Length: 130
Image 1: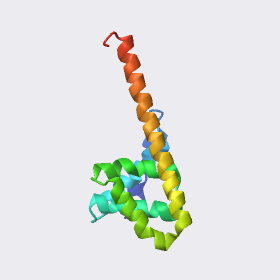
Image 2: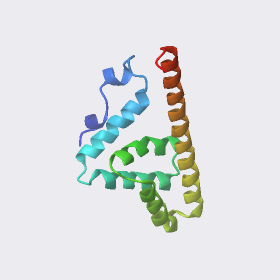
Image 3: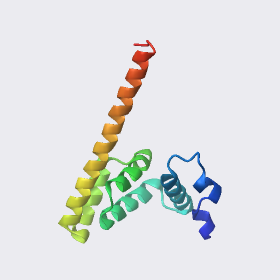
Image 4: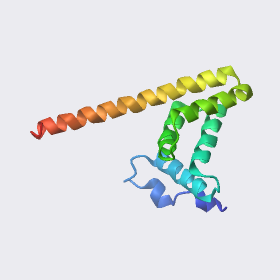
């Protein structure tokens, strides 16, 4: 695989239109990896989740992968199974850390969903639709 395959063009990476340039680059890299793998999407996400736990990743890293996991049909039970499977390998401290960071990520996602719903409701009220 050529390095160019995983890197966005300079124009795309530096575009003033890009609201989330770092996330865009990460998404492009992830998409390239997914397309080149023979593993099914669910297996890929489970492996990525396991790697995040082993690396003691930040909450945002988990959040970045949760949407893809849901799209692949994975559930919180699948995530729990990964944690149980990894526990003897990475240790209790890493599992507790991952669980805390996953909770933070889910809390953030919930807060953002509530905020979006409140903004939608306010917009409807302002427009006289309610």
